[in-house]
Image (cartoon, rainbow, N blue to C red):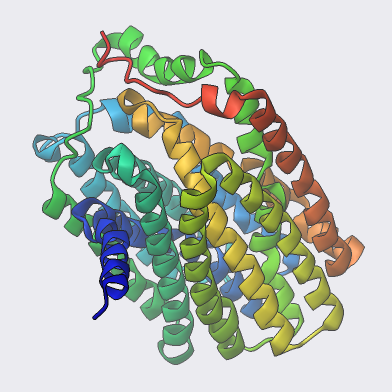
Length: 438
């Protein structure tokens, strides 16, 4: 072996080693558990309702179950501050992790046993409960992930978390479709509930995060109010914080609209369950993993700011491919290209945008601040999808609808570019922990 070969092998090992550390692997496992509840009330439930003959307006209205993910900042301070009885002795993060895991499993099993074709109201209530439990699970998982990762591991950990999220959502989504085809939806949801296990295992394996700031106990109404207000006021005291929040609110509108309606498009284009599982689930999964890898490379080579800007452009442009697919009709080749393009763009964005949002969090208020930022990231798109997306598709058609989603994504791109130019992206990132500095 030549000296050049030895040097190349050493560089390869050095690049792989950070991914094999305990914390990034833990982030991967946490991501697996985080991703599957979203799939259960997202693409999987959409397909189930469409196959049961539920009309488009009702199907898209079910996306309002995702509102729990957008409102989770309201109860995230409780995850930071409230000590659970009995489980609390295992630590603030672990106790909430295990408690929310049980809640997710139970609510998903119930959703599997309700029958939308006979009681749409019961199905809606079950979907909302899955949303609330899943959002709480996400609060804890995000806080746990940020606190187990050292600052140098932030980019790698975000990538591993995104790998895990897609593994969980794709595997649960594919498993649900395949099991439902043979044994029905009850068995499918019952089996998918087991996806909470990786996060439960991480709590035992890694223990309570060393970087977690022990919460100030809530004593009285004043302390309870401050537990909600302090994380928000600390964030908004930063330079450019309001513009950062505006960016977070608008940057994913187009992407959210496209993703939450794609199963309706595939159903109306008469793609079979097998084709959906192969391309939207299987091929999309591979493309997303490639996108995450590319995102990690871009994060290292371009830096966080330029990588985020590039990802925003790619996510906006990728929606045009849905319009082309809608125009062409049933085409497996175009479906493969569309799913590939969209998932690569989303994978890149998943790494760099999540790393950016994580960097904005103060460790004294990890759960509350990340819940606020991640919830804000898709609230507008989900509201539009749940209230008007079905009607928009019916009135303007799929082609014009997906072209519109591209246009509405452009203001977020322009705002982030302006924030970069003015230096507001850097100034809003917290450098020190406020409690540690006192």
